[in-house]
Image (cartoon, rainbow, N blue to C red; front, side, top):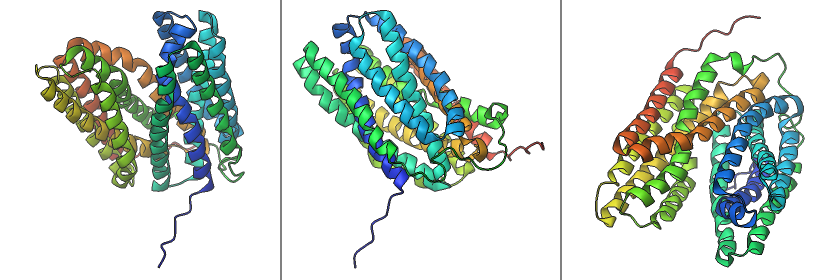
Length: 403
């Protein structure tokens, strides 16, 4: 007998192909942007850092505003507009010759990407219900990771050539890929949850929902772990351990493989609010263990033991990331008012943007700057956020005040 193949929801199919294109572009930019800005555009590293910080601060605002736009005009329209703006912003990098132009282009590109993240989640919140929406988000995250890896591989060609023209072609290719993502997005079905329609009834503002704001703040603390992997870990490995520098690339690859293999499976751990809270706490326990392993890797003189400890750290870090994210997604969906799902997801994504914006300073000033005490402090922050989330999810819901 032939087993029937599961039929994917058309919205998931469209988002999957859009993610393939956009995340491949993201992988290209991750790899070549720093060198492009300094060697082709002629900007100083400090200028690049300040410009991207300004753009990141703007992304917090656009993530929040995007939620309101999704409630008013529908996530599909917002996605299409944001994808167009991001492609144009990335293409504008090729015209950058001074600080002002760079900052403007960065604000458009980074801000539009932030809008897309909110619109993606708002679309999932409307189109799917129950555990299914967390499963869809997990599958899209796997596609995102794999596509970023593919984009990084493509960018290796430009890095190997190393010429000005090669970098320009790489950036323009990323811009084209971002615009290619418009094709599947335009194919999103005009059904409930995709257009401008909303559930009937007046929703409550997320800014007055203390439980949701608390959960968002706690998740923002946990979300700093992303920059721990991409900023803190490379600085620690290259500057404070006996491991060879190439270990950084191998550890990032290990994280990609683990997330790809286990993110979808982790959704089995979560089926309601209490289980989501427990998952977040378990994830932060693993993040604490990862911090301790990272710290320990700075003590051995031998490269072999240092690498072994770093591998253990990244394994714990990856599973902590996988499990805590799964729980956080469920809480962001379950505690949102369906009548204002876009606004709620805008608040959630703004929280993540804040966490990622402050993470470089927090990570470098604690773990990298202080060594063992800093690693313990950072891991304790993760654990406290996880414990707070578990307690919040176990508490009975507060009564909704009557109008």
